[in-house]
Length: 71
Figure 1: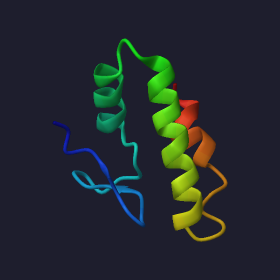
Figure 2: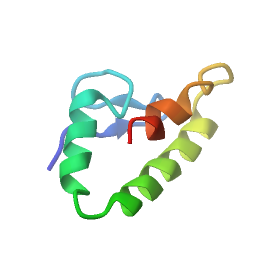
Figure 3: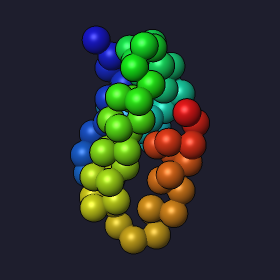
Figure 4: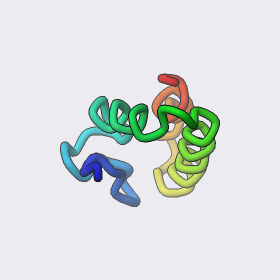
């Protein structure tokens, strides 16, 4: 199980403190969802919407690229 998971409401990685999904978290998600890219997209989009409600205004301008753009 990955330790690179998001902490709320900051959406920082629990393992490294970087913005989640961090590089290690992305790699682990790619492995975990290797045969289910659509499910990974849905999972990340759902988290992006939740982050939009948690993060203060002004921090949400790059959320698309942060959560989905790397796919």
